[in-house]
Length: 503
Image (cartoon, rainbow, N blue to C red):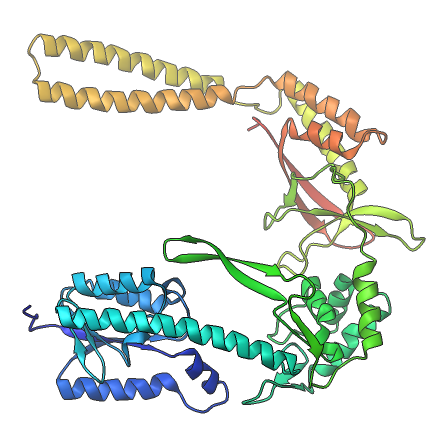
């Protein structure tokens, strides 16, 4: 097949997993070496390079390789003659669906594959066969490599070697070895976390203590309770190696995208042995910290609604829901508070639920009074519905006149058709708007009565939270919470109540 004489080439650079592992220890820069080699190749063959795509991630699928997806889009340009790569398997070594897509894209765009060994024309039967064969063999080889690596990792883990790709907080990886060494900067923080846990502080309190002390995470972020939980539950800190505990498997596929799910292996189906690395805490301290951090957490037995504002109250600044949390005062008496997501830009402090409920009752009392006196507009403005009905009547008269003109041969069939279609579109829009406004029509007296009924339930301490919540949801759309004054002794808040059907 004749090739286009004018055009350009693009270069695609991607490192393998082995290359990425070597680069961690500064052995060499793979992409730079490949780029130099392929640039010299293009110069010798007089192939002009218009664009270089550098894949910086080692993705198994096309969906994970953002730069390669750009390559597939780029080769659709008729002036793109080919793609220059270090080897055919750098284009992809995934499953048959993926390398089938790659081969089809190359074939139908008439794109050459240029490598240091040879050029491949996907529309040449021999070259196409070679491309198919190399990708097929690469896929089989990839699966075998993955199986061998997994088996080798299991054997190495059983020997006490750490197999994680990233070192846990408090440790560094030893170059070229599956081993850990304590990190001088992070080790004292690990000691502090376990000490605080042994002293009885919960995970959230430990996170707040570290943040208040100005201690950041490894990447300069704020501590959260889930991160503290991960550290406390990791047996690596007591000198153990755990491998295969969390597994990720593909549960379905959406086109080229794999849908994966992470699961926890059952006891006995993962490796847990004494490691070769230095433990940061004693086994006794690890057990005590975990007992106090996890075993003391109460199990939820009653799943009924305990928060009368559940699903209703949100932060007025960011829209996050406020969550009910039961805490204890100095006398160990439990009471409920509403708290915002921790460490956000809102800096919203928790507040007593009963105080918010009192403020809400005052706000609803004011709303009911305004509805009863007619000082606020409720639901749809009747004049707006009347205006739409007048417009619909006018449009109906215009349509009758249009039919008379057509029957009298005063307009052509094309003019009649155009005007009729425009009229139908307008009538449809007006009727939809009319139905929407009609659905919003409410009786202000009815809303006022419903509000009064809800107020009686909210103020009755014998009524459970779920009944109060159901009563509120009958007429309340949303409650926006904002802090006016954050002073602990004089908390001032603002509640904006959005009622259903209320303008």
